[in-house]
Image (cartoon, rainbow over all chains, first blue to last red; front, side, top):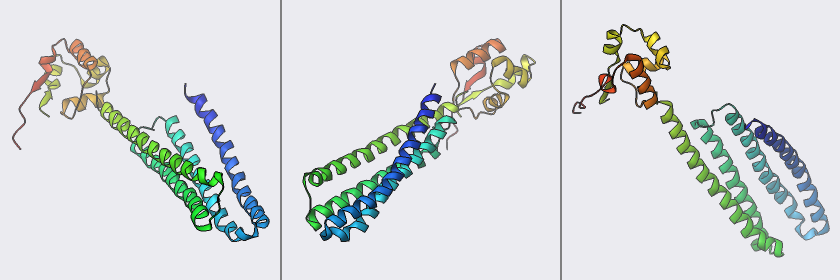
Length: 158
Length: 71
């Protein structure tokens, strides 16, 4: 019943992964364009590009982990303790990318002193969004953990 | 385990082998062994019912409670 959904999700993951690779290429291109147009921020091109590529990299790792978790679902072994480790990787990726994006926005706003409405609004948005996602993952990890406990106990019933 | 599954006595009385018994009840011989050596932690009512049907006995004939020895 879930087979089709898993296959379609895998296709979507591949598309997303290709999209993130493209985005990683476009980030430094766009950054250097901005750097040429506004030479006063040219020194930010490299560090911000690195941060952008890293944030996207976190997303790529998370996508690969989702792929791995899908394989576990497919093999019927999602309710085993090894799955928790992979969920932790997603949580860590989300935390790192949240800190990175918030860090860049804080630096831009308070240390460089540049920022239009998009930066001012982007900072709380990325902080709240990232935090919400991390906490959601923590809650879902708890659900998975209790499902694993239930499954383990049920396996002992004769 | 404070509750003991006494299958040996009933199996001997019905002259049944573990393999035949497992087959008749519909559980694996490995699980029969788990029941017999007291490592079972839980049993379905459906399994218990099946055991009683196969052995033609009551649950009380195969389940016995003993007080845990003081640690």
